[in-house]
Image (cartoon, rainbow, N blue to C red; front, side):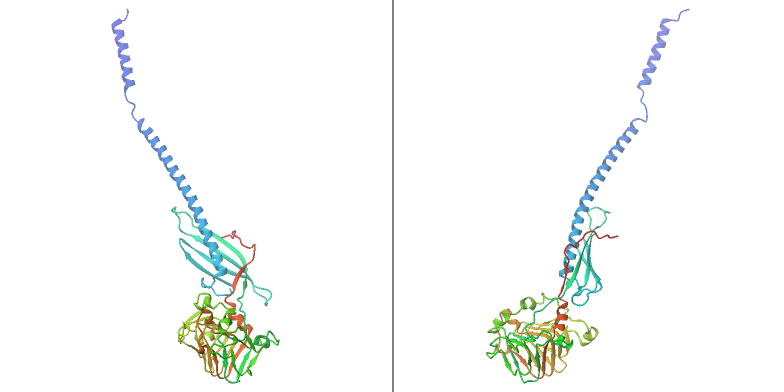
Length: 401
């Protein structure tokens, strides 16, 4: 028996409608995973972009910091050879010394190490110089500090002084009596059994500031070759012949002083200091200017080194004495029995264009000894030496850890 065609078609229609409804029904849970995947891809892309940008910034920052560190390191090495005093380091280096200098965004350490000590006067000491700079400031958080090190080999060159005589007075010198000695014979060489160089006893202008002859008094205490050296017709002409750059020294900046004192002696090293430092020759700067102000500095004790006096000085009493160099802007007056062993120069203010007063002439009374001593002169100027870098020894490959 055949099926009812109407009924058969109805069943097919119902099945087709059911399939269509099933196809049109939403499939739950597919859109959210797709969104998450897209967000993850975008986040990864953004993170990668940030990391790339940060990396490029870090590379750029590292390059700049390295250049800054190199500049600081080379500055430190240059100062180590030319500006040790300003770094707070002593003149001639010892076995080793170092200091740290703080700069903008970092610091640099300068170190001097002696590799070989000097042997006599012919074989100089050799030093290893190192300047290590660290830049701690960075534009990227967590970036390491930039570092740079430069090194060099160097030797020490002592300071020098051209000495014209045992006692040089650019305004003239007068000596009362024949007691004492003014000698240009090298006291250091004589003590060693040699004859050494013999300088003039005194060096003066032909005409002193008081209108008389450059040297007035007895020639009995004079020892030298010649006894009296004429270094100019007038005080101004004599000062023009001076090998000493007094204008650069007068303001206290050309030579870094170890001690600075006023004209009353405040700041002058004590006898206890000299006793505790028997081999030290300091630079002592006496601020008693301006010229002709009448602020006479009185030296009544023993001392050594380089004594720089802006205007007048008086060596007073039997205990006054000096080993080294006296550089005096005005005149020297002496009372009692005193002794200077080294080199003495006075009347230097003439280089400043100051009109010499008649009283500016050196006035030596009593038993005086002004003696040339090359060893004391060398000791007094040793601290003004400098390190000389050997050619082709600069490096930037020193390993740091």
